[in-house]
Image (cartoon, rainbow, N blue to C red):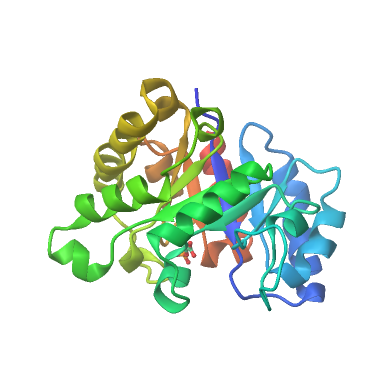
Length: 251
Ligand code: PEP
């Protein structure tokens, strides 16, 4: 039985004071729900504040990217060694990083390895663009992202990985992917590659989230699908609606 995991991706939102306010608004209600893993993936600037607030909390703290080196001459970057003092999770390969910041399947792969070897749970994002979807390339694109993103990883690490299936055309658009279709894509393009790379046991242990316009009203439709073990949530994670998504995952 896979424990559901719902993570909020705050993206480039919230000053430290605003982050404090948001945590105070959500914390108590989320902590009442212990049957699922809930995570706030915050901007680096709020990491110290939010991790201090959640030190004794069941809510996990994550970041939205990490560099692959532990240290060095990489101006403006943040290493896994720095992050692990405060956070247990890192989103890696989000489509916005792939689209705007030159992230490739290969850089995703070395960041995933860096996370795992530094005791950080990678939430590796995969998903097709609208063009790829319309050209019926979805399964091929995701299978490729899985294969390259997960290369050179030993089975001893693999079970910790979380995969987020995020159709790019569904992110921040209000156009959520049909839950049955999302489930089918996850089965064919995520579980099957997981099985081919790591074997049956790992493929049944790794948790797979759906992400893309999830909200309090549609969350339950996703969580009732057998291959969907939670959600990666953008816009709705900044609102009280996030609690409704977590409640839906707990049911
Ligand atoms: C995301 O940023 O990963 C995301 C899924 O955003 P939204 O929920 O706003 O579509």
